Length: 237
Image (cartoon, rainbow, N blue to C red):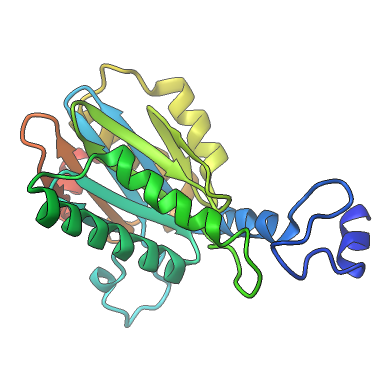
């Protein structure tokens, strides 16, 4: 009822207008869009960091490999997103450009936290100025600098570091599984097994390895490695 009153009074027409109780309704709507997006899992492992995502393709004639969900940002950084995928694509392409520019300018790879802050700042910018809507997407960044790290940037422009987390439509169910079964000592191989187990549980009869996209970066080599279907089949229980 209170939300409807806010809408009728026009407080949700722009991201720059606070409601009387101090809320930015357009930003809250953007966060709800993330919860309707495809499910994505991130995990810091003892030997690296891992991202697993659902492509959620429903069209039989679609070439499913074209629905890429996990992207290489730099040799040592990967990213995926949940929410409006067109927003995620733009932000991840911006991250790729920033990482490339940093390498050319400084002759060294960009620190993950520095890149995360740049993307978070851009997101925050779009919550503060009229004529533009907030990005309706959360981006999950995984990488290895001195150690493996995992970050989430949400539509508000805030970011957090995690050991393991999930975003998207089934995030609460998967977080419950991670809270119960994730350990700091988990390896990348066991992390893939755990992620597939969680995906299979939340997707039920719709689970299909064709729908799963993923990549990892090992601490030893700091190189982005895509996970293909044959590797997923090997780790599926």
